[in-house]
Length: 331
Image (tube, rainbow, N blue to C red; front, side, top):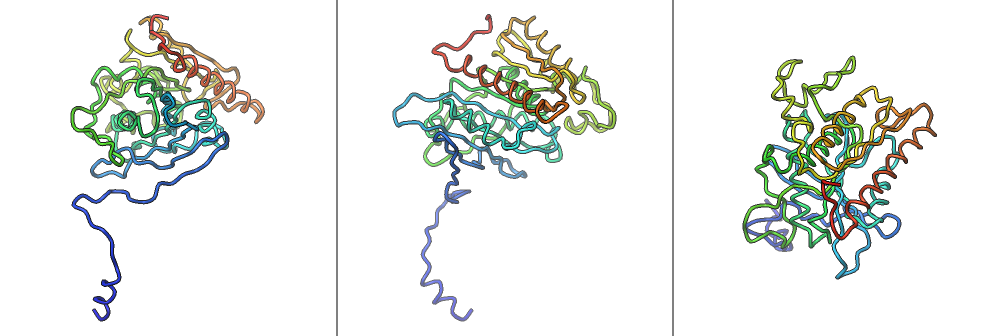
């Protein structure tokens, strides 16, 4: 082409045998109290799917300071929608996550494959991969790989509860390796585990075998990849946190509105009963007058319910993660 040779003579860009999959400059956001946000950090790339990302919220952390505990947030949305930047009725959920980070946590809010992209167990595999990613990059982000919590609401509550109780069962084994940033790639060996030290589940599905299906809803069939409106019992049990409860599980906080018409309150009550029977440290907070998402009869009541749940959650993380010795299940 005319002029092509002259144009190429003025261009000079490096090439590499293994080009970086994402060389775009790191994006940053700022929040009050010195919290920095790193949006859309890629934590996994799985063949045939979009890159999976998480939003990181990093508090001010002087060089040489002790590493900080980690909270992994998992969004809701009936496994068909939702983003890492929303939860319940909060108008600005990134500000909520930044406020948690300001208390001395590294906070990661993760996305995962929805049921239109891949059926169960894709979502829980993605959540576990996000935890492995954070552990691989513990030094880079100033986090303590031995103090990790999960937190989610609704569909995210089911995934948070499952991540808390099933990590040691080998029931879900992702084949993906964590995405490496810069020079953080290890010299070899297996990837880190995805076990956590505590979990919080807001209005979660905990047992697909016992949950009442509200009218005009599909129930769990699309999420579980069932071909009809009836899933076999084995598949319902496979995806249910209730199936994996044992004495070795970490402490768990359950928060549920007592007027929930989408996910029955009995799901949290029955699940806590299983936890207590297994000797697992657990708490259950039922919020009077609150429907799913802690939505109540008025905007003021919705705010009060949402802040009550949030306050209990923050206090739970403080009590479980900000100690020199992690709580044992025998408490």
